[in-house]
Length: 259
Image (cartoon, rainbow, N blue to C red; front, side, top):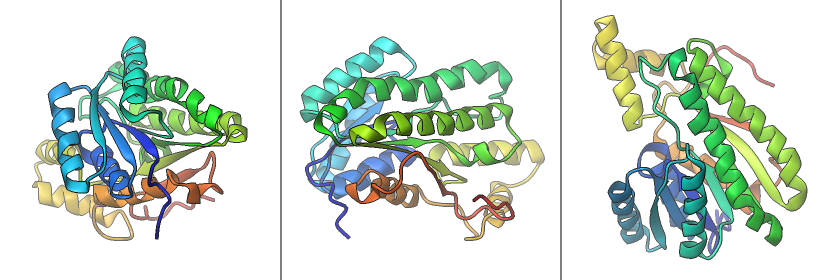
């Protein structure tokens, strides 16, 4: 299926690894020009060069801290200059949640994942509105739908609420805004969390991964590329019927019914 992304220009924050890098790859493979954004300048440039060589698409790396107003403004200017404009924004940058990321880290988490998403949206969507077309995909997480981490739930619920508000605001200007809730996904940070949980519980990492796998109906962790396929569709013109809604990409959490 042709997603109609050829010639589109996308910014992916948190784009140097994990889900963000997989999204960048998926968009580039569909013919989009992509700007990967991450805090580490050398790392994001290397990953951009890697994707460009792999896909043949234009891929640039931009160093930025989405937790800082001035840094986001500079990132937007770099993206406009490097790509000639921005049609798609995938918000994925977040402070990593670890075993010690408790309520004392709540403000940091909100500043990067919620306020940071909003900073990027306000910086990049005016051009989309001028052209009458755009897509914003916010990556949140299934902690929005279950308890277990106060900070994790708050930050992801906030992203979902922000998404709906912005969808209602920007939809009439041709900009669709959606939120994707990944679950247990085999990323670097997820594997680190598995090791930490295993150490704390006196289990092997394989035992902990098995517990995660048993909690979803597909019976295994989701791969980053599988989440990226969902995001690529939402970033495309084909997704026009979806606006303000949450899409779960967690492999089918057992038990709960969401309607």
